[in-house]
Amino acid sequence: MSKIALFPGSFDPFTIGHESIVRRALPLFDGITIAIGYNTNKKGFFPLNDRMKWIESVFQNDPKVTVVCYEGLTVDYCVSHGISYILRGLRTSADFEYERAIGQMNRAMHPKVETVFLLTQPEHTFIASTIVRDIILHGGDASRFLPSQIRI
Image 1 (cartoon, rainbow, N blue to C red):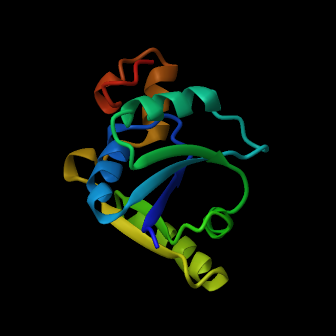
Image 2: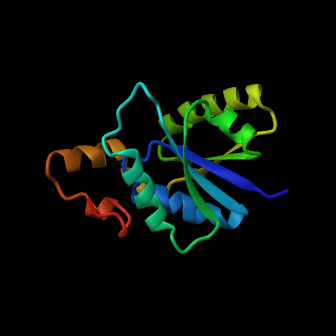
């Protein structure tokens, strides 16, 4: 059985912190599916198709990475697609508390799905999609916080 991890998020936009988590996790798994969550009640800042294309361009030379969109509970997506691991990056202790609660709930619902946490590299700790999006919204240059393949 393949060890596939799901890396879920809105990725609005996908940052160098996200890229780092995926690249560091690649040796641990046979494949990583980057899953852009879609919520009909929320409107993303960047169009979903753009986010998908940007992420695909970042990993275009890595066949172990796929990009999908999904709706609903992440853990249900994992179960319905035979994925046993959820990959999450942790920047702060607040992230840990939040992600731990979600991971424990997911495990209570589907005990065969494990959540795996990777700590963000120290130089990426302050990078958050929300802040990067705000920089872009106000005309600032956020390019140093985005993978080189993503030009907004």
